[in-house]
Amino acid sequence: MASFVSRLHQAIRTKKTAALVGLDPRWEQLPVRIRRAAEEMYDDPAAAKAAAFEEFCVRLIDVVAPLVPAIKPQAAFFEELGPDGSVALARVIRYGRAQGLIVICDAKRGDIGSTAEAYARAYLAGEDPQAAPYAADALTVNPYLGEDTLQPFVELCQKREAGIYVLVRTSNPGAATFQNHQNSEGQTLYEQVSETVEKLALQAGFDGNYGSIGAVVGATYPRELKDLREKMPHVPLLIPGYGAQGGNAADVAAAFDSAGLGAIVNSSRAINFAFRSPAYAESFGEKQWEAAAEAATRAMICDLAANTPAGQLMLDSKEA
Amino acid sequence: MASFVSRLHQAIRTKKTAALVGLDPRWEQLPVRIRRAAEEMYDDPAAAKAAAFEEFCVRLIDVVAPLVPAIKPQAAFFEELGPDGSVALARVIRYGRAQGLIVICDAKRGDIGSTAEAYARAYLAGEDPQAAPYAADALTVNPYLGEDTLQPFVELCQKREAGIYVLVRTSNPGAATFQNHQNSEGQTLYEQVSETVEKLALQAGFDGNYGSIGAVVGATYPRELKDLREKMPHVPLLIPGYGAQGGNAADVAAAFDSAGLGAIVNSSRAINFAFRSPAYAESFGEKQWEAAAEAATRAMICDLAANTPAGQLMLDSKEA
Image (cartoon, rainbow over all chains, first blue to last red; front, side, top):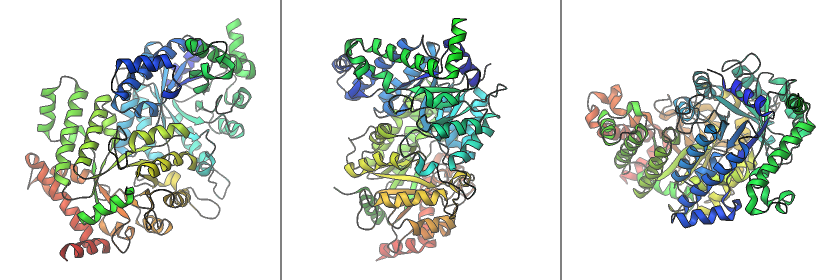
C-alpha cells in the first residue's frame, strides 16, 4: 500500500516533471472531425457530445501519458451532458489510470456529514480502481461548510490511500472577495483554511514529508502562493492558473521543495486546444491536433524545467 | 414567464405551507422490500441501488406532492452510484416536476468562469424542463470561490427563470469554523456573503419583493437566522436543520415575512425514514412506510402552522 502523495511523487520522479494536464472537453472547441463523427453516430445530442468528449480525452491521454505524471478531468463539462456525460467521465478516469496516470477529479465537492461521505465514496477510489464509480486517485474539495465536513473525505483518504485537494486560494479574478476576508489580527480566511489543511495533511497518508491532503492555490497570485507554501510545509499543492489564465513558471517556482516535489502545476486549455492557439495553429492545424497538444505539453515541461529551480533539478537527474 | 421565486411562492400559497421535503435515499435505510425487489431485478449492485432509489423517491413524491410545494433531492447519494445514479436523479427530478412540484437540486456546486456555466446548464432548467439534463427549478451553490463565480449562475437564472440558493450559514456543527471568520469591524464571512447574495437577488428574477437568488441558512443557529433574515430582505431562504438535525418551528419562525412567505423549511430524514422513528414505527411499520412518511409530513406542516406566525396566516387563509 502506498499513500496518494507517495504514488504522486513517484510518478513525478519517473516522468521528471510536475506538469499536470487538465482535461476540459468543451464542445465548441473540439476538433471538428471528432464532433462530426460523433454526430453521425448518435442522433441524441447528449450521447453524441459524450462520445466526442470520451474520444477526445482518450486520445489526449494517449498523447500525454508518456510525458506527465497526472491528469485532472473537469467534472462540470461531463455533468452538463447528463448521465451520458457521467458514463464518459467514469470511462475517461478509468482509461487514464489504466495508462499509469494519477487521476485527480476536479469536481469541487463538499457537503455535511453522511452526504460528504457519499461524495467521498463516489470519487475516491485511491489505490483500488474498483473501489469507486468515478475511480480517481484524488478529488478537489470545497471547505466553505467547515472543518467537520472535510473529515469524511480525510477518513476515506486514509482508508483507501486516496487524496484530496482543498480549495484554499483559487486562481479566478474574484478569488479575493471572500477568501481574503481578514480578521482583526490580519489573518485571511484562506490562511485560516490553510492552517486546517496543514493539520489534516498530517492525519492522512503522511509519508514523512507530505500528507495526502493537498491544497489548491492559484498561480495567478504568486505572493500568496509563496506565503502559503511556507504556511503549509506538509501539504502537496495543486496549482491552477498557469498558461491560459496568465501564470508563468516564475510564478510557481516557490511552490517546490529542494527535491523538486510538493506541487503539481496544471494547464488545461493551452494543451487541450493548442491547435487553436497562434503558437501552434500554423505548424499543426486541426488535423494534427494531437501533435499540437504534445508540443504544448513538451513546451510546458521545458518551461517548468528551465525556469524553476525544481525543474532544473529534475532535468539534472534526467541527464545524469 | 414567471420567475423562480414567483413560481415558488405561488406553490406555497396553493399548498398553504412552506414545508420542503428533502429526498435523501440512503441504501441501508430504505424499506427492505424495495431493496430486495431491486436486487432480484439487477445483478449489478449499482444498477439495483439506482433502481431502488428511483422507486423510493417516486413513491415518496406521490405521497408528498399533494401536501407540499417543493422537494429537494440530494445529488450526493445518487452520485455515489455512478452513472446509474445519474440516470435515477434525472428521472426523479423530472417526475417531481411532472407532479407539479418545485424541484431544488441540492448539489452545492461551484467553480470558476466557463466551468460554472457548465454546472449551471447541467442543473438549471428553470421554467422549461427540457432545458437541462438534471431539469431542476433551482440549485444550491457554494460561494467560496468568489462573487465572480456566482455570476454565471445568476445569468442563467435570469435567462431561464431559474433560481439558486447560495450557502451562507450552514446547519452542521462545524459551520462556524470558516463561516464565522470575523473581520476587524466584527463582520463575519457569512455576513459578507449575505451582502453579496442580497445584491444578486435584485439582479435575477426579482418579483418586487424577492429575487430568485436565495440563501441557505440553517435552523440550528436561530440567532444568526434572524439576523440574516434582516440583512437579506429580498432573499428567499432555504432552511435545513429542522427535524433530525435539531431545529424546531420556533427556531425558524423569524425567517418568514408577514405574508408567510420568504422561506422554505427542509426536512429529509425525519420524513423519508419516518417508519424507522420511534414516533411512527409502531403505528405504521415498514410495510406502511408511505403512510408513515405522509404522517410525518403532515406533522411538520402542522408544526410550522401552529408554531410560526406565518404558518398561522397560512392556516387562516385555508379556513377562510
